[in-house]
Image 1: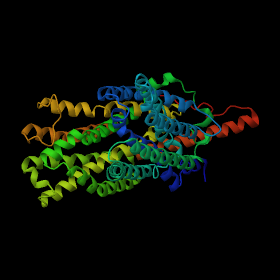
Image 2: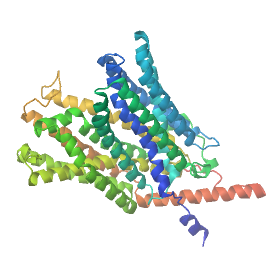
Image 3: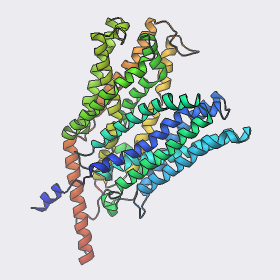
Image 4: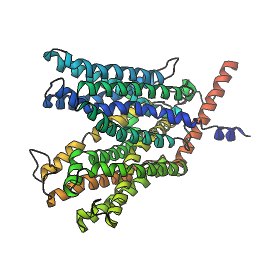
Length: 506
């Protein structure tokens, strides 16, 4: 076998299936906190006694602080080198910070003097966000060392999607059917039991994720190892300026996420299910029905990605969502909305459930499939410049993603304000009007279509398809081999060889 053939066949480092499955739990470990924090307003206002306006203002300000922490944590990740690896120490530390701050927030705030409650709540919430950012950044950044095999990277998506569906759907059922029933309301007992489960489960998930990545969190898998250029904080700008794939991926991913966020706004759900379809309870029923199709779409998407690549899968899924929701939008204007309900079960009901499930499935698949795509972008940066900066690239992605997705409440609020709801949101008691029909359909169906079209356009300028990534991985493997040979030769003869400087020209 020639040296060139040897490089080509050795360009991939793969992971075992259990490692991918367990590492995906790192995302679940933070998402379970995200789920539980959805009830923080009930604690802060109902138990601690803070006002709704103050709590809303604090949570909005914390969104801005959350965005600021991303580039800082990303830079720290890329400068981290320990005997325990680059990613595992930050994963563990982040989870510890999460657990401590979370428990203190829900157990100590209401015990403090009234004057101290607000400053403490703000401080402990800021610490919580630091821990959250530390651990979530690892989910994106460590994809590069988990595996660079294009047949394996998409597998993260299916595990992550299944975990998220089980967490958020199962979690909501657990809270509504068990905890609220047991305690009668959002009481201290309610939070004590919920928080114990959250902290324990998150710790277990983190331990399993650490075990999964232990053999991969080694210097040999860090880009070009010791020969990568030193990372500086000011590198953020040239990376963003010269790495077009990260810009296109951020645009596609953030608009995909915005589509899902708008769909999930309770005001949009009330307009669509409560007013247009006339039965708000359908929102829960249809969500349960959509679970199986969503999982099927995720599975088919991952299988397609393993054959055709992540880019083509994201584009194909986006087109499926566009076609499904555009068709539904038109049908709702051609037929009486009541003909789509379960009460009037017929052909239109089946069509509605099928097309709506496709759209929901696409909204689940899209945000999950872009996580391993971040690893492709990081490998491209290593190929392009020699830099190994998965943390900084993940931070750039997260920064814009959070900023765009946070627009969802403002978009829905602006839409209902245009049709006259300036002082209060529509409720299930409102009568269906042409304005409510259009805005309700636009929020649930129209805006996702527009966002998916933006994603499709962005992917036109994203060069990292499966063929391009194969070339990049082969070149990285070749460069690393040349560097290793040069290092061995220098140690033996003290001579310089090709490959000593991995920095590539633009």
